[in-house]
Length: 199
Image 1: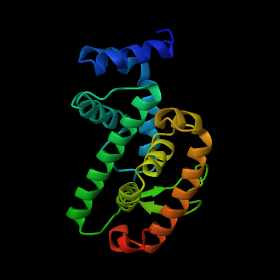
Image 2: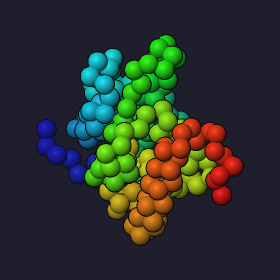
Image 3: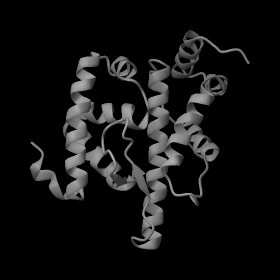
Image 4: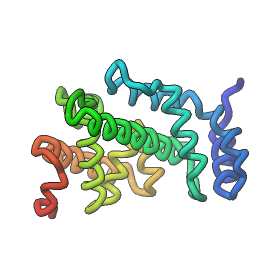
C-alpha cells in the first residue's frame, strides 16, 4: 500500500469530525503503523505477562475512538495524541483493576524514558503517574497536555506546538516545568494528598 499524504489523513479526519463514521475505517490503515508504535511503546513498559498485547491495545483504543463524540480533528498529530490518551487510560484502568484484585501486589512500573528526561533511571507506578498528570492538568491544563502529547503520545516539540496552537518555545518551557513538578510529586507520593502545595 503506497504511503498516503498527510492531506489524505487530514481529509479523513475532517470527514469523521463531520459525522462520516466510515472515515475512521479508512483512516486506521493509514496510521496503523504509528498506532502500533505507540502501543508497543506502552507495552514495553508493562510486565511480561500483561493480559493485553499491542494489537489488543490498538483494538481497544479503536473501539473507544469510535465512541468519541464529534471531536474537531486538527491533524494526524492530534489524532495520535487522542489515541495515545485512550491507550494510557486503558492501561491505567487495567492496572487499577489488578491492584484492587491483588491489594497492592505486583504493581505495574513504567520506566520514565531517559530520552524524554522525566525520570532518568527511576521507575514510576503507572497509576501514580496518571494521578500526578491528572493533578497537574487540574491547575495547568496546557502543561498536562504537553506531557500527554510528548511523553505518552511520543510527539515532537513541533508537533505538540501544532496541536496546542502555541510556539515550540512555549512547549519546551511547559515541558521543563511539568517534568520538574511530576518528579517532585512522584518522589513525594500520592498527588491527591498534596493539593495544598500546588500554587
